[in-house]
Amino acid sequence: MDILYSIVRFFVTGGAFMYPILIVFAVGLAVAIERYITLSMVTKQNQEVWAKIQPLLSKGEFDKAYKMTNEDESTIAQVLNMGLSLQGAVRRREDIEIAMEESMMEIVPRLEKRTPYVALASSIATLLGLLGTIMGLIQAFTAVANANPAEKADLLSASISVAMNTTAFGLMVAIPLLIVHAVLTSKTGDIIDSLEMASVKALNVFSKRSRRLAEERSESGDDATGNLPLGAGAPA
Image (cartoon, rainbow, N blue to C red; front, top):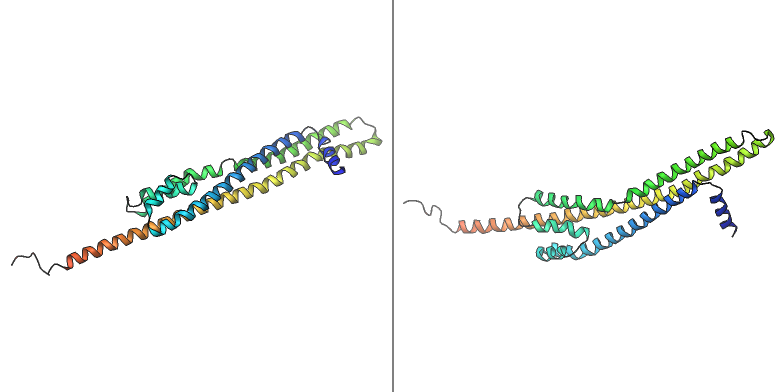
């Protein structure tokens, strides 16, 4: 009970700037929770889809993989679907790679959406805390200007102590939000790395498949030519 009373007293004596800081904290926390849940769901969906598609790619069952990615809305399915749609239609690996990178460019902004607002909330909370302290100090010096000289030191120290509450509260809000922003940024980076890894693995499978088909065609052509007698078709 004493702790709760101390918290309430700390907040009330901090002044008017404590309320904007509290609002900033609520907004930043709401964004952070929404982003964490969304990124966690994206990670889980990507892992489940990749676990199903990877065996199909290894077996060369590209039609089944394409159908699966075409019916799925996960980010990894969108990237792989772009590559699978061009597999066999183009010869160069670079063409498929460019198409998958284009898909990545559409997905990455969605993953990073609203995450910068958490860092912005942290900065705003710090600045509001400093502003509240400065305004409190101005009011404190103004109040003691006409006070009894014997009481000036006590009044000034008490006013400064109250004014510093806003800085303390601003930092108490800013530090957790900054840590959460780092966690969200790391989580987003992990998802992007996993998408790039999946795209590279898919490209390697496509390249191996193309080389194997080219070798088979080459061997078939050599056999057909080898069956002809040397000089056959030449004039006698």
